[in-house]
Length: 224
Ligand SMILES: [Fe+2]
Ligand SMILES: [Fe+2]
Image (cartoon, rainbow, N blue to C red; front, side, top):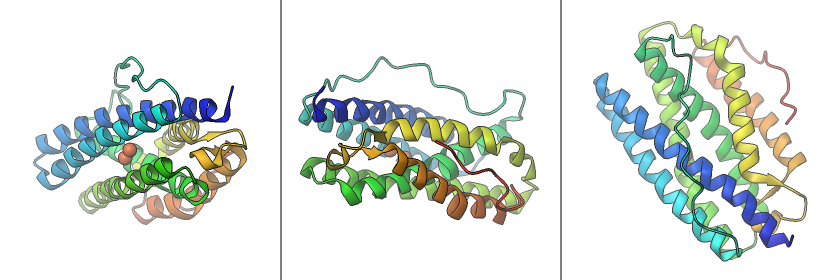
């Protein structure tokens, strides 16, 4: 398979992730609105619109690389968090899993991709996407800060490893591949693992610790 074809296959993973994110932020917008948190609801609605835009940009990159830009069949949106949680806790779980964990990892991985990409359309796409993902991570941290100001959110700590595993699996699949594709917006797998480990230790754990979700740098290094 040619390098563009291999890169296009990874960008199809990114497309699937972006489409799933539309659903997660749409769900969060509805939950925040139901709780009367209209500022967070508006930010989540904007995030859903951003993710729809990202999916379109991914399709354009896939087409430019000679791949099939048709979106994969829409899978049912995976529900986030244990079904037994009360509705408000479920929304907080989703905001932390999607915003604080997934989007923070995504920002760091996209910035690393941006540093090595040279294909002009790939560079423009990464620039546009990463700007928005920073806002989406901020939305998650804002939701956590608000919840932590009202009540103890330490119960989330029991779920952090599961959030990390899900986010790493999705985000790494969406950006990492073999070593020859950096110009086309695909990170070498070893570099992606290193970015994940650094971001986990220096951004996500300290952020979660600030709100009492984890005690500090307690989690094992991320292997992949
Ligand atoms: Fe996105
Ligand atoms: Fe996002």
